[in-house]
Amino acid sequence: MNNALIKAKNITKTYHKGESAEVKAVYDVSLDIVKGEFVAIMGASGSGKSTLMNILGCLDRPTSGVVVLDGTEVSRLGDEELARVRNKKLGFVFQMFNLLPRTNALENVELPLIYSDRSNISRLARQALETVGLKDRISHHPSELSGGEQQRVAIARALVNDPEIIFADEPTGNLDTRSSYEIMSLFQRLNQQGRTIVVVTHETDIAELTERIIRIADGRLIEDKRNPHPKSAGEELKNIPTEEEDNENR
Image 1 (tube, rainbow, N blue to C red):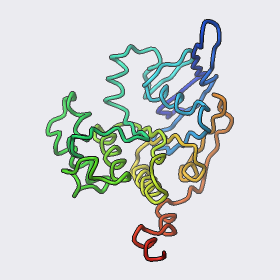
Image 2 (image 1 turned 60 degrees about the vertical axis):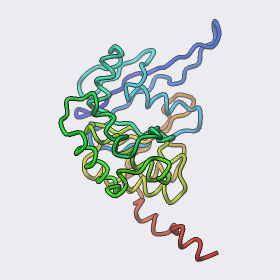
Image 3 (image 1 turned 60 degrees about the horizontal axis):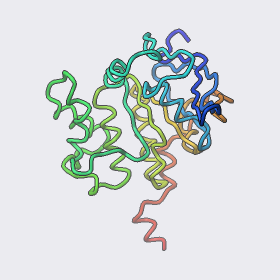
């Protein structure tokens, strides 16, 4: 694909156990991700999907193979250069939210901007929180937010540097069903606005909300298929009762 934002060719990641044993967490994976795609990397626990995401997201290097991000080969960059690439081009969302507990939502979102050359970081952080629907929660600390709201703060933090790609590693793993679909509805909306999003998940119903599903097993890419009619998370939400409705039905 000529307009690929990420090009990975023959990626292998090998870990050594003991003196001689080798484990290939990712083995000979090649794929392209095009600007504007909404992709799920799907697999069971231990399949290598998070390792693959870490390599594509410049959090780790492959043992062999090449990764090109936006025209630059990143698979051989040094630590400082990789850190600059991550800060300028990539945003990350994780299962555990990774918010600072003594810092409010606004300050958590400001963190990626502290070492940037951006001016008025508070304004940018407020805009990001407004984008994810938390305009009225900017002064709340993580302990005062629901799991879904904490994940929205994490997404705002990923958005605040205007990244080329958002990587989300099991972003619904710690959420209830309704909150999971709310987060995926937000990702769908961001994708419709032009954001490139890569979601790592082991859940089929979450993967089916994306436009392309890449399946990983034992470190190998076993399937890469288009999903021409992804389900709408917003429509799915209509069938999931709110907490208040659930209580009324009991």
